Image (cartoon, rainbow, N blue to C red; front, side, top):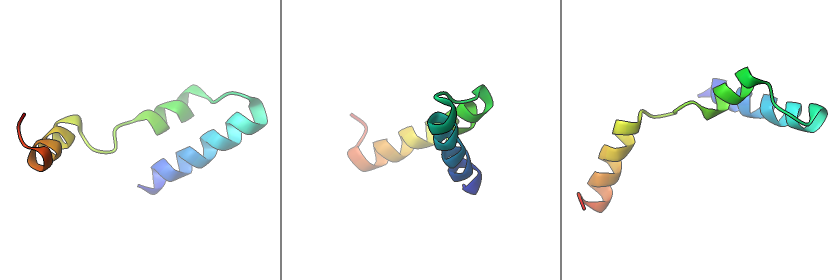
Length: 50
């Protein structure tokens, strides 16, 4: 998880200092933390299968 927080800090630095983010930094921040199907299972368990 620290790799994501490091990427977020880097993205903020790049955005402030350069006005844009590098593609690799953006990809690191945009990646899934939890696989999509896991999120769906958790939500269905919490809210029910509606």
